[in-house]
Length: 118
Image (cartoon, rainbow, N blue to C red; front, side, top):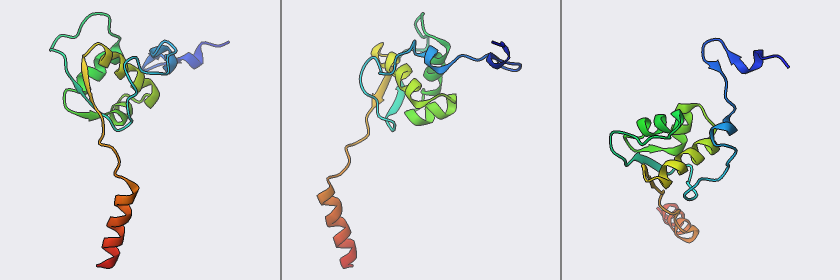
């Protein structure tokens, strides 16, 4: 097998996404919604033992940021970022604000009926 496909002249070796999560597909702390808002909760100095991706997430989330936006900025699959954010949440380094629940379908139908009546 040639080493060419695993190297990028500008970026260096390419790491497959599943290695960033050590093969895990489920977040450590809890299920994190795609539109959940992530914000850094820790102090200015991150603890030892975090990977570079974890540190980038902490840096990007000093302001409230949606999980999908973090994934887009890191150019990583959402599932990978979900696991990495779960790691940070389990260590209480980020807060995860869940989106409000969707309104009941009955309420939406009543709103549509009211709009049609106008």
